[in-house]
Length: 234
Length: 331
Image (cartoon, rainbow over all chains, first blue to last red; front, side, top):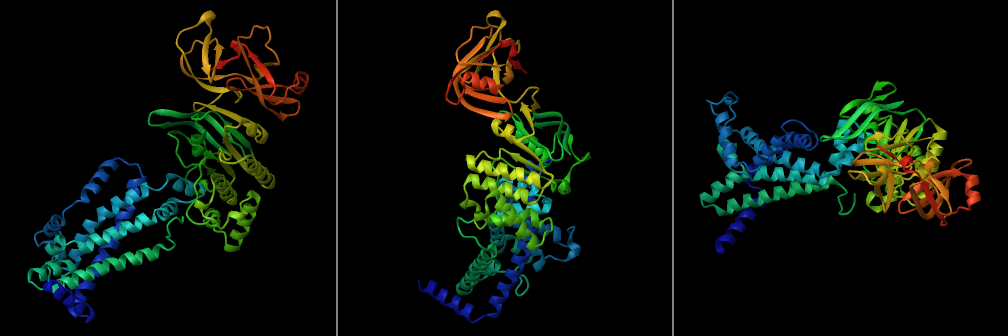
């Protein structure tokens, strides 16, 4: 128990002393997490809309693929991306292997199916009369989609939160294509793994607590953006 | 002019609408009547351009109608309309804002239409604070606010009480008097349809029925023949004699002008004689009275005002309806 208490004491000391390494790792994680979430949701939510609302050949197969990709092991995504980005790979010329950009790409690959599948489910949950009504009042395709999105705003906010949570919490891809290089590609999850294996439980715990705080911060920010979201109001 | 030309519409492989031509001329007041499942709502959704016909096309002023530009001239209020999230005022603003009206004009138009539809006191409320009838009135107000050329209404009074229905019909009449507006309304209430519309059209199994819209029933004709070549068909709790040789699902029509109305059963050649009580008397035009009676199913007969006086007919009074088997149309 002393070891745990000592771990917590050291964790809070590192957090409140504004330790440069700890905050550097946290800021890099936040940057990667926000960028990957932005790209994944920017592509995945419209894809979810299309999957939910547009009848096209192969739609059912596309939904199956997206749903299957939800369970993609992060380390396998990392491995595939490693193959693409390594010097001998088709994207080797980018020289992104062991950079934070590679981690973003891996995270986008992981979060895109989450965004697409959950957005499709969110849109399918909206009464189809909402879209019809918007159209019959003269709305074009985009405004009608926006009206549907407003109705599904809680579910879509949950999509973004889930995607961000998945991105900042994954380790397999970040470790494989990022390499856990100090000051360059070390994220909160890879650092926690490293410091735990080195026996620095206090530092690992401090980083773990910061990871939780980041997730909390993003949730609070999203809830604030949703505005008047009191239960029962519509 | 809004029109459907050569339209066949299918859900899966089932034909739900088959119309060679259906026109809504400018300024017309059309009521579409027919039993549930006859295709009324589908017809309105095609006219509203929110569904594309499987075959054929929708034309507006002779030109194939597609896209938001055409949809801004035609609007539909569904049978169970939905409101968007936000207040009633924000709902009424929706169509006006996307037409580029300024804030002052929007406020003026909304206050005006809300007053006419009797929803002014609801403007600050949200959808979960409204009854079904109030939602329906707000939806009609939202549609009228954008001043469409054609207003399509699917059972607009299905959730309204009598007073609210009258307010709605008065508002529609006032709107038509104020500016050119064509209204096409689907209703199962024939009385309202006749009182309000200039043109009543009957729809049966996705086709325009070649008969007047009263006394239309979906039936299942039994195979084979009974005595004297007559077939007895269950309609509600009565059996109607007809001399058709068809079998299976069909529409059975009893022309209201072919029904004899009497106080006592008559000795006659009519094979269909049913006793019941008068449910209502209505006067669609001078000198003509529609007598509706519950004879096991509701039937409507058309007779003269003089006949009503001579027979002393009034709601609740006993009555006998008689008609020949050959008068019954089956299609």
